Length: 292
Image: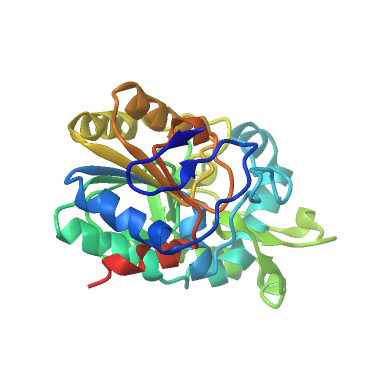
């Protein structure tokens, strides 16, 4: 078991119990941030749960519900697309109103003080930008945009939401529990009756402008992230289990380069053995000291 120079607590492995929470743990992240001027920050679903958006995994890194839609299923089945957009139309009513929380605002404040080289988010909610962060790469895209898979036309989600509602008025009164990424849990619904409008330009299939499972992250985003990682002097991971390789690869490379790596997460992460500092605190508590 390794010990971090930022706190007296050891860096936990997957089999270790959570360390006790004390003043030293609360002071560890400010000490880590103050020691570095070019942080490469990665955020995951855990940072947005205080905004009312659920995350995918439990503290052990396991799925809380069935895995999300894959690109192959979405493109290969009109019924799968109807199911996706029906659930998304209901879920968007809450997801689209989500607002940044303390953690988002704290990171925006850290950017203003010059501590952040890049904020790489795995989330698709746009809440970092809404909080005032500018140097952001939305690794997995943005749910507030809709893309045609044929001609590439981009439509604002707000406009497409109106088209979905106009085409499916009987669905508007449905109530459901919001799920991750703007989805909603609709039990026993007949998705065969749900109508999905086509692209207004070419009639093609419309898909949210996000990276589905089984889909590659656009090369330009990855290249931008690598370029910023080359300039970073440390890495901070917040609210991510890093179970998805698209984010984990950057942590692995940071470790290879010898960069100090800190993580704020209550549960286990795929990179626990690479961490120099692990802070098992609620994210808002850990980041509150950075608010102006």
